[in-house]
Image (cartoon, rainbow, N blue to C red; front, side):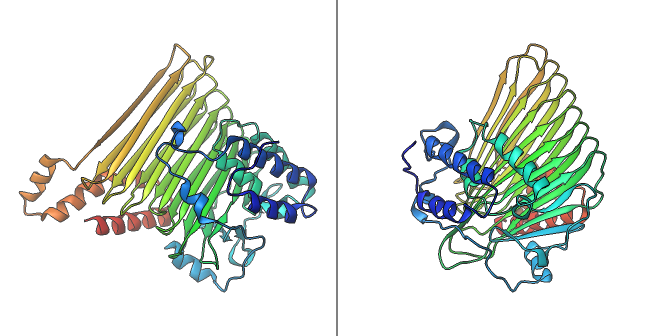
Length: 441
């Protein structure tokens, strides 16, 4: 047994005591195994290469507390729309400080499938077995972010989405996570599990919002399991308060001929870290990851991607852009890993950063690890300031300097926003982009 030297021992002991007897025994065992793995790994520090630019000492000092039950709220559906900034189409699941709120949500009826609270599902025989199987498998990801294991140990609630074979869910699903001030600094650990059957389609968005709070920490994990020829579009919008911490881990498994398209947008959080681990485990699978991160002030935004090609004839693309102002910092660590048997791999990675201030900093680390000999793989990383020639061209035609900077910055970012095809969500992202440009101009 490892000695627990982490700052989360008391939180886990409290959670362990309340979970025992109130959930299936196997899930309680998984919690304990996950926490033991977290303790074994220990808190990451700057000597750990992948955490070199993500200081976590603030997490240790903040004394974050878990909420053992759902707090009450007087919010209505219109309040949620106002906080999100749009009335999103389709169906919505609202989570308030980590717990599902059925009165604020509207769920689709999926024949022979499930869309709802994972907390409710794990006490049902059929869906509880799905949760147990998938969460048990995730314990084997020994190179995972240690906070992924902490999430699995302390998870309070989340979304379970199970789409059966041959089902095209036409209406979009929105997962909205709202954090509000509490009497003491709080941490929430939502965990989502999305299982999409063969020849099925799904579009899902995660939105994280919070009013100005003194301090809180969202540590979210989402797992996507795609069957053969499944098609999933995943969008994430993170705009929590600048006083908060936000850590997120996304794990994706793609079977043969499946497609996973992800669009990530980060505007909020004081320290935010977004990770994606994608594993292509069937021929002709495709994974497309796009991102836009826009830190300002003293914000730190970290992006880490591991794209692992395990089968032949698969394709992937990573396309991330950062716009950094003031004294903010950004990090991009993207890896393409190609196993020996993954011949005919076609994989690309691009990270471009635009610095709007002499004091802004970007750290970019593109990586290729290739063990196959018949592949097409490339990576590229660029960073710099607005182009002087383009600025001169615009200003010579009577456009003021501030407006010229705004036009060029918008042009730099807009192609990522254009990849979002859901009109209300696209319009919201356009609005958020304009708001951020107004601040930085």
